[in-house]
Image (cartoon, rainbow, N blue to C red; front, side):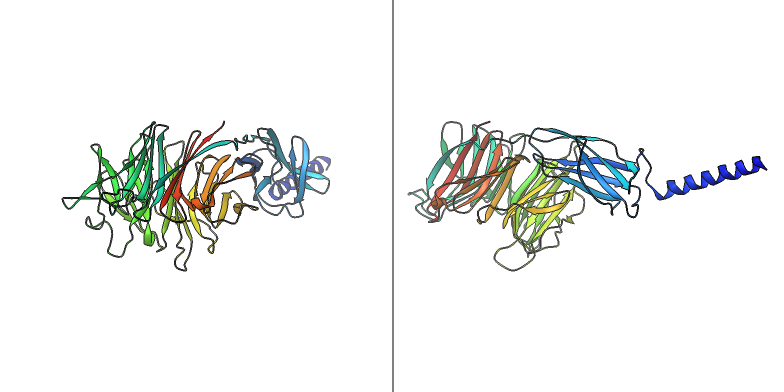
Length: 435
């Protein structure tokens, strides 16, 4: 009889323990875990995962051994966000799940290190080019190296041929030189204002005048996408460029047009929108794969503002973006965040989009960076913004500069280009960041 009672008691304990294991996350193991999602300069995002939600439980999060906060635990997968960090510091987090005075589970420890801020100290120089015979503008700029800089647009300053623009400006390390970049079209030399430029890592330069210009034996070759049958009659021209190599180039432009070049052939990509393509940017993952982002908005007609993404040439997908917010430019170098500007300046992280507050209410034309702690933004009324990962610095130049439309960063070098309010002067602003 005693042996039977002991046996029944043992079975009861096993059943009770099994029920508890089924209704509560395990201690240790993989059932209750923390994982770093993104760490910037003053903030960190951690992914918290539990096998299930225990009704009535409380989540406690600890930083460096001290309780950071606690709240009811209602989601099995959530983001732990801490925005009270110091630059260039290391922190260790862990989480615990409690039911009353009883600890149900304890996560692994995660150690993160915040980035340092970058310098707000820039030396600026303004270079001016007159355009007395027509309305000039510089639309885009690219840095190959400190002695090889290109800006593109249209400048009417030739008194002998006042109707014929220069469509490029080049710095060779000693002087700026106005350039006319001709291409052949139907057997005849053709000159058009250039709208976009992109420098590949090997130093090759790609232009667009609404149609792509690719390097060809020391010159540039025009690809007339309509004549080639790549674009349909109602498609728009392309004005912005991004790529990983001469064999992998993406172009976007008016009426929602996207095209891709693989080194030998062109293909049109259906975007699903007819808005104007304002910018394209991407990044290459450590494994060699890549992601591309396309910003579509049109200020001249009502419509949706669209942000699209594409991975490794696969199908396009829409990203969440406030439908009523104009998007002009995008930049990223990481899968953990994305920056955008137009109507304001925005950042997308693990918790979605947020708009930076307390910035001058000026339209922004272009955003570029070298990291999450080194972002530049240009726009109207001669303003350049710099974000060092913690705060913003506003550089106010002469408002007569008008609109800064193009921007490039490489190392400590910055170049911004634009047009004066009276359109008969164009500007290049050179910046050197004091590291």
